[in-house]
Length: 229
Image 1 (cartoon, rainbow, N blue to C red):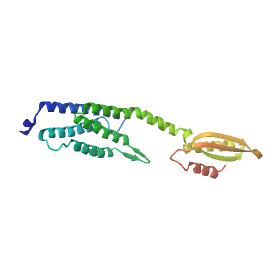
Image 2 (image 1 turned 90 degrees about the vertical axis):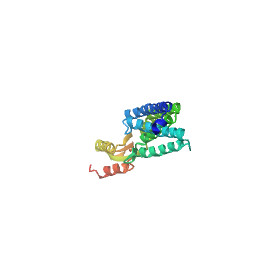
Image 3 (image 1 turned 30 degrees about the vertical axis):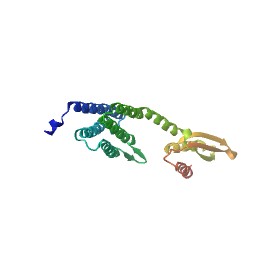
Image 4 (image 1 turned 60 degrees about the horizontal axis):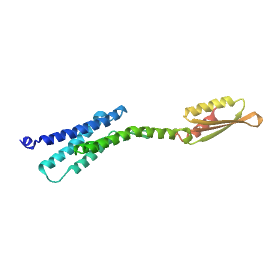
C-alpha cells in the first residue's frame, strides 16, 4: 500500500507538532475574539489556523516524497486568497457603519499563523500570534480612547442659535429650546441671556449637533418659528 510506503514516524511527529502549534496559537487568538463576542470566535480561528497548517504541511510532505517543483509558496498563496473569501463573509454593513473588518483581518492573520506552523516555522508562528493578540487587545483601548476624544463636545462643530423674546415668555422659550436640543441629540455648550430694550431678552445658545444630522439647526429653527407661543 502507498500509505505504508510513505509512512515516516519522524515526518508524522513533525506534522503533529505543526498542527499542535497551529491549534494552540489559533486557540489563543480565537479565545480573545470570543471574549469580545466576535462572530468568528474560538472554533473559527482554530479551524482556520489548523486548516492552513494542514495545507502547507501537505505541500511540504509531498515535495519530500515526490520532489518536483516546490509548491509550498503557491499553497500559501491559495490559502491567503481562500481565507479572503471567508473573511468577506463576516463583514456586514449596518446603515452607514461597516462591521466585521477586524474579525476578517484576524481570520486572515490566523491563517498566516497556521501557515507558518505548517511550514515548521514554529517561533515565527508564535511571534505572529503574539502580535495579533497585541493588536486585538492593547490597540483596542487606544482606538476607543481616540474615538472618545473625537466625540467630545470640544472636538465637535459648534453652531449658534439666537432668539429674541419677551421676559415673560423667556422660561417657556428656554424649556422648548432645551427640549428641541435633546430631541435632536445635540450637545449644549453655552447659554447666554442678555436683556435688551422694551422688556425683551436675547437668548444665545451654542451647541453641537450629532455628526449624522447636519440639518439639526434648520429643524430646530423651524420648530421654534412655527410653535404657537
